[in-house]
Structure formats: C-alpha cells, structure tokens
Amino acid sequence: MPLESSELLSRSARSRPASAIRSLLPLEKKPNMISLLAGKPNPNGFPFESITLQLKPSAEAGSKPSGEPMEITIKGSQLEKALQYGSSAGDEGLLGEVDKILSRVHHRTRGDGQPAGEFGLTLGNGSQDLLSKAISVLFDPEDTILVESPVYPGVLPELVTHKVQICSVESDEQGLSAKNLRETLQSWKSSEKTKHLKFPKAVYTVPTGANPAGTTASTERKREILAIAREFSVLVLEDDPYYFVTFENLTEDASSPERALSYFELENEQGSEWGYGYVLRFESFSKILSAGVRLGFSVGPKPLIDAMVALTASTNLHASGASQAIAGELIQYWGVDGFLRHVTNVARMYKERRDMFGRQLDTILGGESEMPLATYVTPVAGMFYWIKLHLPPTPEAPEGDSYQVISQKALEFGVLAMPGAAFFADQRKTPYVRASFSLIQPDEAREALFRLRKAVLSAWEDAGYETVPRISS
Image (cartoon, rainbow, N blue to C red; front, side, top):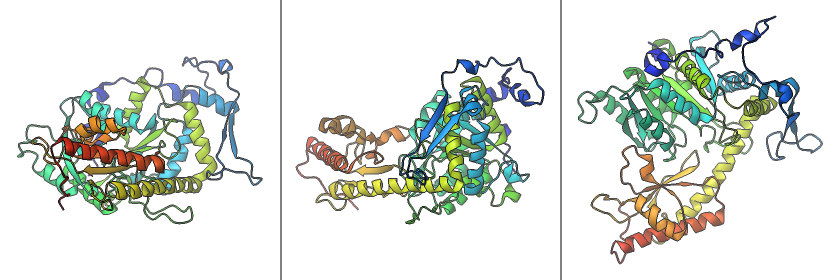
C-alpha cells in the first residue's frame, strides 16, 4: 500500500490557512482576466535592463564557434518576470528543466498519468531551506525521527527547535546500516532506549558522499533500506546534495557515469505492490552550479510538497526569481545531455582534489608515514575525509577526544578542522575529525596536515607519553 503521507503532516501544517492572495494568483492566467489582486511592484521602477551571463571558456559549451565566450542574456518580458513576485512552488521554466532531469536521471516523469508520476516538485533557497520546511510540516513536538550516525549537523538545530526526539542509527562503510535500522525498528517497543518514544515518522540519510563520513550507499543497500521503510511505514528523507559529485565510473570523455540508483527511483521497483510516497528527496544546485545562487529542489509525496509550498507562501514567498531565471536559462541552453556533461566534469575536478589530498594524508598522517597517526576510508563521492585520529585515551574517551585536540592544540598550531562531536546527536566524545578537500591547494594541504600531526603528537606529550603507541589493528 502507498504510504499515507498526508497522515504524517504536523498539526501546524494541517492548520495553516491558505495564503489569501497567493491562493488566487493562478487565476490571473485565465484568458481575459483583469487582475486587481496582488500588490506587485510596477516593473518600470526596476533599474535593470538585462542580465548577461558569460560562461567560462572551460565550461560545458562555454565558447562560440569563433572562440569567443558564450553569453546568455535575460531581458524583456523574461527579465521582467524574473524580477517580479513569482510562484511559491517555483518558476515554471526552471521546474520544466528539473522535470527533464528527473525523467532522464531518476526515470520518473511528473504528471505522466502513471502512479510513479504522481509526485510533487518545489524549488527552494537551497536544499537546506527545503529540508527545514519539511521538518516543520512533518513533525510535532515529541515526534521521533531516525538519523544516521554520524549525521549532517545542519539538520540538528531545526529538529531540536521543533522538539523532535532524535534517535541515532549507527552507520557502517556504506552509511545508514540496514541491519541497525531493522533492529532499531523491530525492538522499538521493547528497547529501554526507545520504548518511551513515539514510533518514528521518518529516517534521515545523506546517501551519497555523506557529510561528514564520506560514505556512499550502493543500490543494493538502498533497496534494503527502502524495503524496511515500506515494511514499517517510515518515510525516507533522502538528502542528496552530492549525488552528482561521485567519482566512480568516470570516463575520459564527458559521458555521464553510472551512479547508484536513488531511493526516489527505486520506488519504481515493486511500485505496483507497495505503491509510492515513501521517499521525500532533496537535491541542490549549490555543489554543481553555485552555492551563492541558493537553489535546490525537493520531490516526493504531493501532500508533503504542497504543505512545504504553503509554508513558503507564508514565509519567504518564493526562491529568488533572478536565480531561478539564471539556472533555468543555463540548463535550457545546455539541455539534459550538456547538464550531465557539466556535472561529470565537476565530479572529475573534485576527484582530482580528493586524490591530491589523499596522497598528502597517506604520507603525513596515514599508513605511508613513519608513525601513522590516523586511519580513514577514501571517499567515493562528496568533499570530505572522515579521519579517525590516533589520540591518547582518557576515562571519558577511551579512543581520545578530537574536540579537545582541535579546539586547543590544532588552533595553537594554526590549523582548523571540524571536531567529530558536532556530527553526533548525543554530542559524544569521539576521535574523528572532518577535513574538507574542496578548496585547499596542495601546498596548503601538506602544511595543514603537518600542523595537525604536530597537534596530535603534542596531545600525547601532554598526556605524559614519551613515545606514541602504535595504532592497534
């Protein structure tokens, strides 16, 4: 049976009245309609004649046949529309381009008359904005959510603010563990840890290049997780901003690599038996077009998407019209094939940066160094290494506490990394740190890792050790 997603809506989402003005705006499009409705500013007061985008020569289709940089100009009625108040769900032009990408990449076409096409789609100010809204429309105080552990910390403040009970599910080398998820749900009413909590509405995961752990779930792992979600009627919140930043199966040409199927696509499997509505997916343009453009989109059960759009209508009205126009025109210029070539080139660039950072890590902190002081797994997507430092034990932290080392020792030596405690809902003491390789240059990477090494050695010295014991296997 399909997941009855409308029953998951929070009390605030159910009680939110429709925007008196915005609910009537679609009627302005009716033929011969004269509107006195909205307080839209007169475009004659806008000082902009046009917006011209000049692509980098190195970008996909970035040059004209003459070799001149390619320019895309937004002007006239098109610009007027971009600078005006728009639809809370998003600009129709950009939504149409996203629809094409969804059809090609995830093999689901909105509004095609099939059960798989009965989903909603909305744009937002980045996927973080949409994730925040999803939390608001899904959870009442004291509701429960499952999160993979370690977890992306950006999701925690919103959950805490809404007084949602957070239950962690330990991850493994592929991220969210199917085994641990099943055991958690099966023992919910008997476990001392969970029997006093409401049964969870949803499970949150970053399945590709997870932030911070860098783990990526295989298609088979996702099948296992989705099967469990269907069995226990739990919604999967699939936060996938690094979906296109994957390093496996990259070829010398710019053809699109084979990626693990998304949870959203996997709903097609056994869809006739189980129905749809078990996945609410979030994607972002931040990692592949621009972080500052602040655009992302969410697809999933229509009742949930509609509730998120209603929340947008009463908060920020809609995502930036200018940003939507820029992204829409660029993707339309490229077409889906060009877009996929572009994201593959972006992934190739990040793979080179990962390899560079990994070589430095191996020789300075890892197994190729004279005295290894860290262990880690090479990520196959994303922007991060999740590094387990070899630290002196304490009674409270048998494997050491990276927070103390990073917040004190590392600062003294002039290097910053993110302590692992920030990525656990229970703020546990942990030896892990997250290191980003997205911006750092080779010389800076080398120096940063040398400084981190000095910080670790200094921690052992302060703990009273004359020599550092070897890492136990």
